[in-house]
Length: 136
Image 1 (cartoon, rainbow, N blue to C red):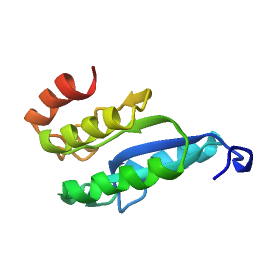
Image 2 (cartoon, one colour):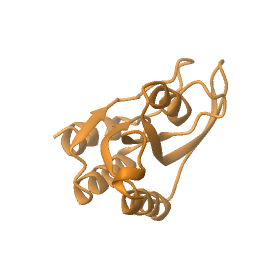
Image 3 (cartoon, helix red, strand yellow):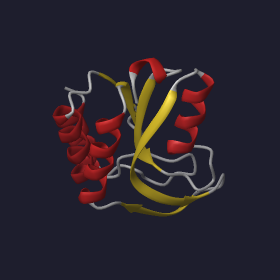
Image 4 (cartoon, rainbow, N blue to C red):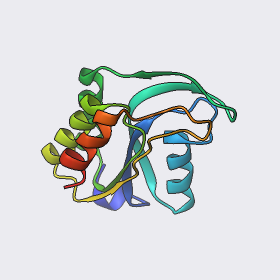
């Protein structure tokens, strides 16, 4: 896209899906659009969930996460990014490495750890990796 073709600023959400549509990437996209921001995304994991609870979660392989970052950042002028559920230390590190690689400057870290229904969405070692590898 050429700069003059862009109607809205472009942002990136990096999180898990929510099949119920009320959280995760779905909620981030809705919020960005309400703020007149074009939303792009990197899905780190997939959940099966509804308003009651998370029934299952599946963190995605590193290769597809890396490929999503490469695809989005090759084409869009990402001015800011937001994280959400990252599931575990390995996935926090993958995200942190990509943020550094692509020099994403404006980052909101949303440390999604537990779903509304009580299901853990970030392991204890994931919390440690977030503190050491993502927040700095």
